[in-house]
Image (tube, rainbow, N blue to C red; front, top):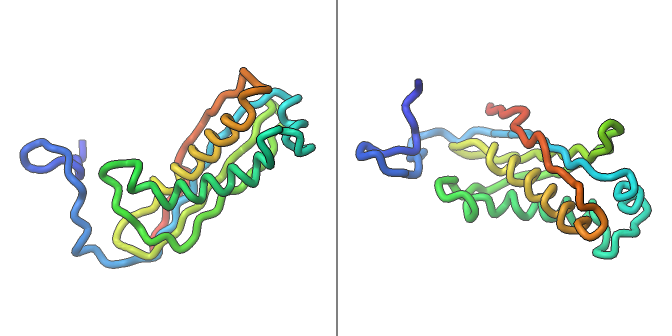
Length: 150
């Protein structure tokens, strides 16, 4: 098993020292699903959720969350993000919304936690906005799809 990078010599949690690492262009892509009742999907698509525009709000929440990842996850480095995108695609079976988050930066460490945070918070925002009409929603399959550096 590989040595844990977030543990110091005395076994305590520690932030990884990336001071000597070169800045590189980095990108991470994550995804997840939120399963919804077909009636809820119709309400979202017809802009009839009383809390407002669900997808626009979830997109902004995901972008804002990516920018705050280091404030939420204790050992994440604060990053100067150069791009964050949150996109959606409706799925038929089961009825669900596919959420895709992309984060980019130029720096000494990766942006996978930012992409995952964007997807997670977008899904939670959808859940919050629709919970009054759909008690059966499920957030599933949040995962990292890719991470690259150049």
